[in-house]
Amino acid sequence: MTIRVVIAGATGWTGSALVAAVAAAQDMTLAGAVARKAAGQDAGIAIGGQALGVAISATLADALRVPSDVVVDYTAPAIVKAHTLEAIAAGRSVVIGTSGLAAQDFAEIDRAARAQGVGVLAAGNFSITATLLQRFALIAAKYVPDVEILDYASASKPDVPSGTARELAERLGDVRLDATSRDVGSLHGPRETRGAEIGRTRVHSLRMPGYVLSCEALFGAKDERLSIRHDAGSSAEPYVAGTLLAIRRVADVPGLRRGLDSVME
Image (cartoon, rainbow, N blue to C red; front, side, top):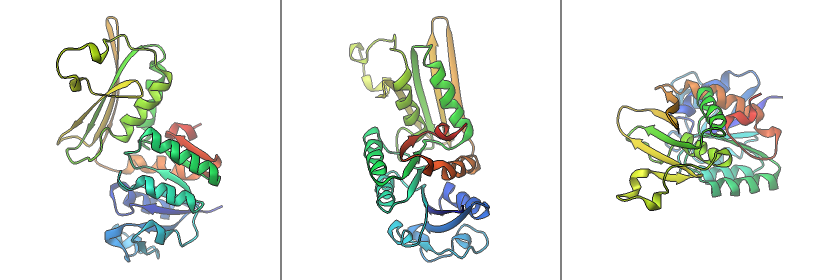
């Protein structure tokens, strides 16, 4: 069966690479594309390629007027939740590649998806190596009590922490042991220097020039340390293969699944 795909954020950094990849995939077809500033243009021409015969829509509502199966969102933190709920209400499965959603947002999305009988797959990072970072860190957290996360991104990234770091922290909270470090409330000095607590894990976000996206899980035990780190380059290509896998698997199970590893064998 050919999967009909709508891409929201079609002219963005990852979205434009994904438009080309979906158009080239034998088991997919580009049913729609959303990018407000490029509305009316052919999606292929808008990303600097050949014409694809698909006009870019200004809104997701416009794109959903055409039959489709899966909506992929690579937009912005301020609109990803609304897009996801809108697509679910229209009976589409959703792949979420946009960061900025909190645990309570995911709970609401899960309820809506189950009520509609559609699947949602959200990942803080669709790169295979970032997925391996998460998998290895979850294993280590079962044996080493103390773990904190360093989250690096460019100076212009609008959300903290990154989706990669937030998802890792929340999932660590489900499996980790109790930390042996002092409680933040007992410390002297500015407590903000200890970072934010997400899912029982301290997260420290750096935003400055020179970084694209990096995430590091630091584990500490007596007389030894473990660092597990993922560094992203300047290309969106590492995220494309993972997103295509998510598109192929998102409709398999109703409700929300988090992390690309949830569909990896």
